[in-house]
Amino acid sequence: MILSMIAVISNGRIWYSVRDEFRWRDWAVPVAGLAVGLPLGIYVFNELNESQLLVVIGITLLVAVGFLAGLRGSGPVPLDGGPRRSHV
Image (cartoon, rainbow, N blue to C red; front, top):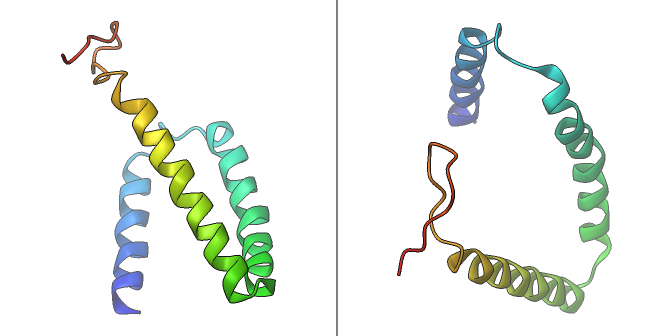
């Protein structure tokens, strides 16, 4: 609980320091998705039994591994926005 309070205060201070550059429109869709998706996800996962939950966790892990394996071949993303270079 204490660490959560410290995190909220720390993040608030950081946001306050960049508030003039903060673009609300860029964050509208992710915040709306969080506001709808989090309660919906909690409800759905609470309704699943143990075996169904294990299947969902397994599918999530397979998708994550596939996604990361797909990214592995693309090489590092340059910080200057230039074209990607192969790391081989």
